[in-house]
Length: 381
Image (spheres, rainbow, N blue to C red):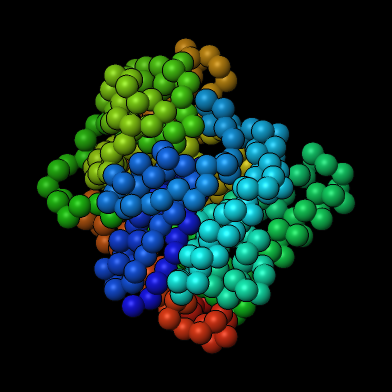
């Protein structure tokens, strides 16, 4: 029985959703999987999907404001304290070392500093697999571009790239990836996995928006503007967001949100890789709430290039103006009747299968044989 340790950072719920999807799929295939995360809220989120996930460390976290804009200086400070203060990353490395001895494979989703460090060094690198959105890696390597002297920013990017490249394998996922691909040197490209809707295809598409906002969204004026904009366009809404727990009409969590999304007129979310994947797989228009996150800005640009049916709205501090923008974008998007929930379900299952196959193979093959083994039916784009 392969033993897999899965560390899912709690900065974005997409990482946690991916971890629970893959954990259930891997367990169904006979693997033993232990999930770790990085916050109490993340552990509670995973518990809603039947996953018991102990918290490795509460010291490391990307910092955001109440509108999900990334706070770069605060994040830099948090990461520096985590890496260099005694009793933080060093303590986590010691704890992970004990767990790695009992695991055949360790998944780092995404870029936790302790596993970035361990994945580059001989005692551990043969077990570590980094999982990340392609846009997130570009954002991480370019973190200091324009904020530090050019040579310093480039040196940081090269160090990070070296750490990532030293690991057993890399799985870069993208919402628009088609067939699985492999570069022959341990880097795989797979389509971002998405939740699988229930097998009940009786319900027709409802005139509503399926809204999901990460817990960093907490600004009440933003929620006011979103609600009023959707109402002005004549649509109801199924709203989920941990940051709005206790707000009328909102749920902090919904393990069956994908069922609602698959049977709604369109989706509302920030342009994370997971949300864009849901829109693509279930063929739904998507209203993107763009915030100041480099990788999400890149995702929104790619959505436009690839012709994904979407509109972008930006919160600028004015609830009335935001409501007007939301209403206008909603009317432009309209509803989608291209696919049924059953068709989306089949597409979601097709995305999930290569992930479990690849991770199981990496967990059961010796590193020397598995690190550069070509992916079955792989092709390079």
